[in-house]
Length: 317
Image (tube, rainbow, N blue to C red):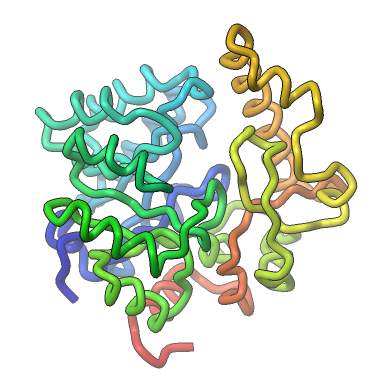
């Protein structure tokens, strides 16, 4: 299948394994490469620049396209360092999230590094499109993690119509071949898929986290603002029910204070990410597991290759 995305990246199928905080790793991306798609890893999955560079060394040895996700808002105090490392390694593509991508696009363009910008509404899409990225990623209401609010059936066609010169990639709602074809029929040139890859053999998270994805459904997915200050999808475990899904009055007040909000956002984000990390890799009653509505497509723990086959091949179950 040939689309603007497959031509840009030289991949067989128009699918990106979405970058997932804590979950994505080199083993998963290499498996994705071998299955004919590509994958991306959040730079924040690496605690140090040395660890990040070791991962990039491993990925580029294979000569196939891979991506790095950069959080470009103020919560990511390591952005400057991460971007510089990406530039040195000339990573094939970068996905920007949660902020203004101007500096990233400006820095990457001379080196031929592709930049795809996450967008979740039309207002932000217009701002990102004015910077001439290589693609816009339409983060729709069925996405996991920091999701959008607009259904793909509305959002993707609106973006295609508004920006006919920019390829549109749809993020959210895909877990099998029929759902991928639906997104392509809306005008998307490819899809970004995350949640169905959490419960894979190559995924580094705990067995408890993987089995939670197997056992729960989209009815168990809720939005919380307690992790990063931005609505994020998680499995509605008893612990999530206990702590609630809204910021408390102090967090909310600090996030709105003109003087303190920058530091409040960094603090809330750091604390929330630490909570996710603790739950992802150890057995604990404080289970905060990030996942999206496409947990409906997870029926057992599979290798990455099988998840890819279900998406790119008709009739594969």
